[in-house]
Image (cartoon, rainbow, N blue to C red):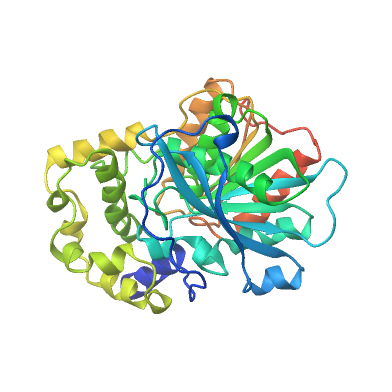
Length: 393
């Protein structure tokens, strides 16, 4: 990173947890359905409530927001589960053919229930991907992801769970908002970039009845299999990601030992490092400032291999998609090495995907400047502008 110590920890804290006061209490812990939804059950509404307090940008545009809980497929077990989301509706009447809709994948906010974006007017920072679409007359839905604010453990970085959440959020929004059409797009940042890329891959087998126009993945966590490799520099950003990676690994493999990944200074500060509710993230920053780099790596080679195998199991791409993709990286990204994403894009191109890849030399990881680029690209897909694939270059 360009900064160090406390400043660096504070910067990542803001990136992971731009928190504000929650306005809706977490959903009660009840057992979600275990049978996978089929047909019209996908995206069916469990609960819906219009929010009285919305972000100032949404209010300025005359938009409204609702908190919903909907049925979807559990990406870990293959059964059924319930996920929460926020649906935003622009001012005015739907155009002929119905409102277009965008499903947004949010970046990492935390792995505890209070880190569900739907609990906060600013969606823990993700509102910046909502208001530009509201301004253009588009309905927007932002899923919280499986297990974040709803019963069960968060399936962190599970590509299948994220894909089902993103797709069924569109179906759920169509169930609560009149006059939403079938054309939809997806855009996401970091963890959300992986989520919308995975949704594009699942479009053929899970997106029936909907028309996906394209997916924009900004600084996506497409392939982190080299994050623990000996040649990879362990920047503070990568060190602070380890507790989140363990949570994802542990959901997929409950036999993984916490002490192999969370120990020493990490164990002493794990609550601050994995939660989002600390005022302005200062507790996260303090914790990041005292991390011993030796504690930021798995304890044994076996633990490294177990983590790497899991990261391989959730990496992208996995299959060809007929949906246009846009992938953006910042060359100053010290969390996700841009080369890892270039390699993932090269693999997607070899599979026959239509990918437009863009590199921003002055950007780091998931910078706000990338949002406008992703929004513009997706708007062009709704307008049927021809794509500019970089795969042949």
